Length: 444
Image (cartoon, rainbow, N blue to C red; front, side, top):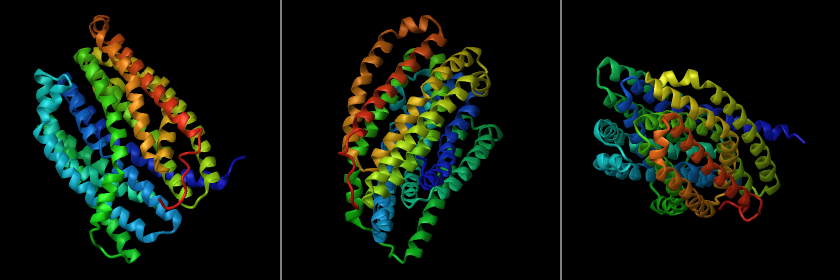
């Protein structure tokens, strides 16, 4: 039976989160569209640099996920002081980790890109973009932490406003710096850095307002920061395994040739956009699961999970159909190369077919994160990675044969392999969700 209250709660969290999450990959989408018209080597370079940068940020995604779960449980249990302190502890940790990550990525930009198979002109463009973009890592991680805290208090509207403003600023700066000043791929990187810093500043200001309104004292809690770091380790392991999958996929794409690599960058950018869109339900799942378990409402959590899973599958099917049919319109936006366009069109059909599975995966992943089931998620993702390795091996060993059949065949094979990864992941999550071990109640 339909529960109107539950539906309103889910939509109230998921709809603003949807638009905020869509705005995030739009940064890379805008970069891809603008840089793609500079040339195929530039677009391929962005693909490599983007993979490294996304990995650097993705490793620390626990700053958002962990903070959401902790804050939501505290909210459900009525522990107001812990709500505020958890948000501040996560923000301080984000700033420290961001600086360390920025230094490492900036210094290792060229070897990191080369390790993914970039060389020649592609390596040059990738290194330039990555070295500059690294400067924005502290801001990116602060955005993750405060966004997670706001989601934990059931506020997805503020991140939406900030994300849309940041996307708009990024688009304007990219056009002005890349074409107006003629800075090329470096201009695109600088535009993104400036926009991310502006977003971080806005969100910090918002959390300070909430802190003052609560009457809490602004002070550092070293124990809380350390606890946030320790609790984030399992999610880091999970994320590293996930990023390994994505990097291995890029590595295989690079072995297929310049055109398949460029096409993969476009297809992966679209897939990421869809992932963030479908992840809106996962955000609702995190917030509602954390709050529900904090209030010891196991039945409510089960009901919400079943509802969101259904929505995820149906939503995935809908967006999948749209994407599969939109290739001829989307491909020319990113490249004038006819071979790249043909490969993108074919890849997007495969991307579309796999979206119902993606919707299922993202919802259950969000629910288990909200439940604080981080240790199992870490082990599960490592097992998924191991299951994906044979797929990678087959594709890599047959790279020359696939490339000989043309970029369309090579790109489609790559994306069928990636879809297999999502299917393996769905199976693992289903096995966990069927049991009750993850339904732990209390403030945590």
